[in-house]
Image 1 (spheres, protein in one colour):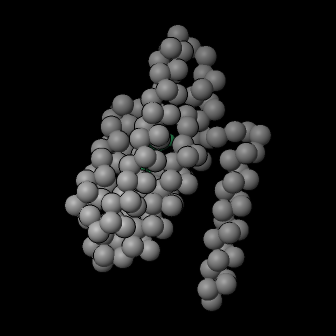
Image 2 (tube, helix red, strand yellow):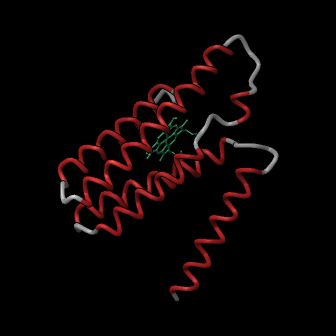
Image 3 (cartoon, rainbow, N blue to C red):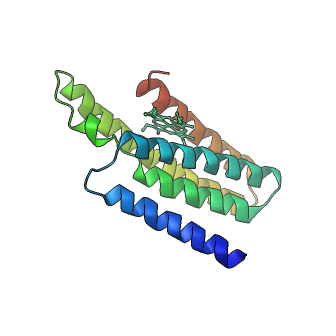
Length: 142
Ligand code: HEC
């Protein structure tokens, strides 16, 4: 059973890695899928906190970091030609900054939780959630 799960996970990882490098580039659909992975990872991290389960937190952080590394403005937005080009460039910069911040705080979660400092770990978690929402407000206009 474990072997089957591992194979499935590996296959889906290979498939998603393949689709990201596929010549059509990063699409809006890819971004939505990465968003779903990140949302699930955040849930896993939170569950790990509540059950005091380091492995769960670790997996959540790993999945979050993996997904967030992919996130970038989709090709159709980067190549969009309109008077808002400067704004689009900001979007790229903004995305890179936020991705970096999420990745950094994800590592903090792991370090603090490992040191039995759950309070600091939760604080890093909250900071990540803040970045998620910030980006949604700024880029998605939620
Ligand atoms: C760089 C900007 C950015 C960051 C950072 C970001 N998001 Fe998003 N997110 C978006 C955009 C843009 C959409 C809308 C995608 C679309 O509809 O095409 C979105 C949509 C979503 C959705 C809805 C997907 C759907 O099916 O409609 C979820 C869930 C989500 N994000 C979760 C997260 C989580 C969790 C984080 C933080 C760990 C996060 N996002 C961080 C830009 C961001």
